[in-house]
Length: 133
Ligand SMILES: Nc1nc2c([nH]c(=O)n2[C@H]2C[C@H](O)[C@@H](COP(=O)(O)OP(=O)(O)OP(=O)(O)O)O2)c(=O)[nH]1
Ligand SMILES: [Mg+2]
Image 1 (spheres, rainbow, N blue to C red):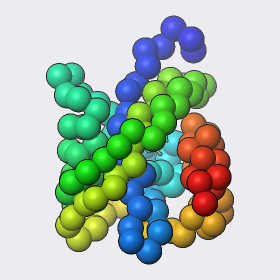
Image 2 (cartoon, rainbow, N blue to C red; image 1 turned 30 degrees about the vertical axis):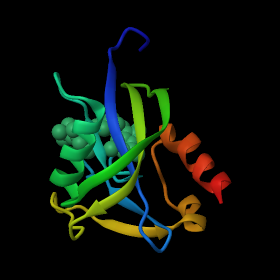
Image 3 (tube, helix red, strand yellow; image 1 turned 180 degrees about the vertical axis):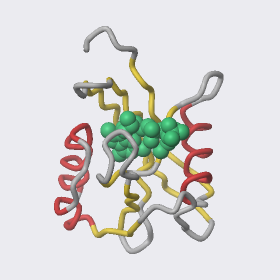
Image 4 (cartoon, rainbow, N blue to C red; image 1 turned 180 degrees about the horizontal axis):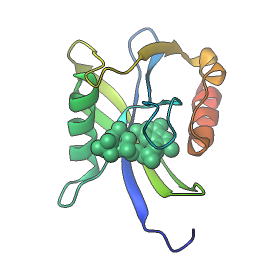
């Protein structure tokens, strides 16, 4: 619905030294459930996008973001929800990755990204990552 407020989401495209990307699987009960995503979550009141990115990656994946840079912004209207994905490339990080919410996660090589079912809003992000190489 066009009148719905936009949910602002901080999204991290985390790439390791092997050129693989960190994907996390959304739980069945969540919006866009069972689909794969780049880790992240809603920006809370009073928080910068970078704060939210760091908080969400720590809470969901045990990752400490040490350096990040803006990649792109995607606005998308699902039938039940409007989102603005504020997508950042995480260029340096530390910590041992864990699925702290019990979710499935994987490091995926760039050319295998296309094989994963993502929410529709991710289409331009995936296209961009595939074009980068
Ligand atoms: N993190 C993330 N969210 C995405 C991606 N693509 C996409 O459409 N989304 C949508 C799904 C959700 O509607 C929204 C993210 O919100 P969320 O519910 O996961 O937020 P959160 O991590 O704060 O979780 P919660 O506290 O609400 O449980 O953005 C993506 O690649 N990564
Ligand atoms: Mg989340």
